Image (cartoon, rainbow over all chains, first blue to last red; front, side, top):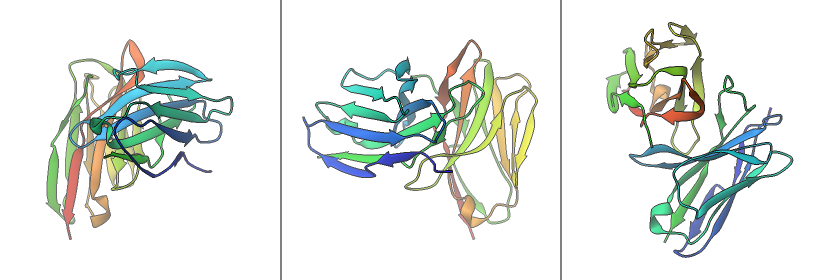
Length: 113
Length: 112
């Protein structure tokens, strides 16, 4: 069974640019969550999508947005990139009920120059 | 955002030793999850716990859902070099059980 797939694995951008990251969940999983991971800060929750609707949101500015498609694939967009946005962005999928744990992809490493 | 208190922050042990780490919170939790993250990869689920007092094993790993529902423990027996990595706890609070709250991780190094 294929796991969670994130593309691209690595990305280099400059300040002010925008970026779109992609996540394909495990087949049959309807929930996709996005996290930002930086050294010393752990995993910071960005948002969760379920059946194409944002179901939960973390405390990130509006520059961070996402969407989910009918096939459960999800994209995350960050506009007007800042140096502090450099991080590992992780996507996790689950069946969507609270008794089902999340399964992670290997992340997209975003570096801002 | 809210985070769990995970300790210790890091550990350096000899191969063959047992390891213990824990997560605590001032809130009551309905779910505790333990993940391991290797360098360059995403976290991998090790053990999921859903009931107070529950004790679950996965090979050499054993995790417990604290009886007070405010803490959880992970033990690794007879450590081996491939146990190296960062271990994260995560949980869902009672009453707000959709969002996962995370610890900052325990970094484990094993000396062969």
